[in-house]
Length: 107
Image (cartoon, rainbow, N blue to C red; front, side):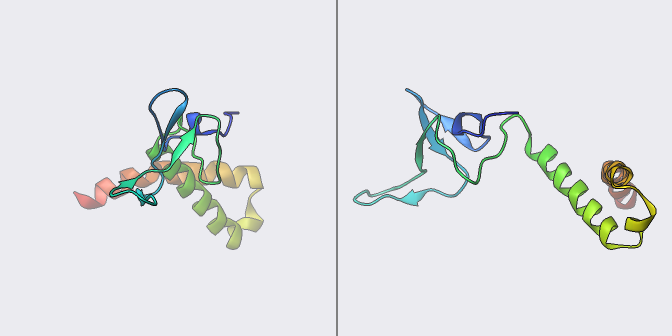
């Protein structure tokens, strides 16, 4: 598993000497400065907003979509019809099919 520190986060922009800027939220006004700045962090810092830099935004969005489908299935009558493992597999298949369904409807 990837170590959950700034240097492995997709929101972190390194600069030099093991420091960088956290781009997760908009820049903030720093006291006694005339301009906004992103929070400065060290490569080994960590926070609760960490997101794996090896996972693209599209992959994360797809994972979230699979989770939402899975939760909808468990809350419905499907929850009693399938094992949990089978529901995860089916949710993944449904999520993967979604862009194709969308593009067919848009044509």
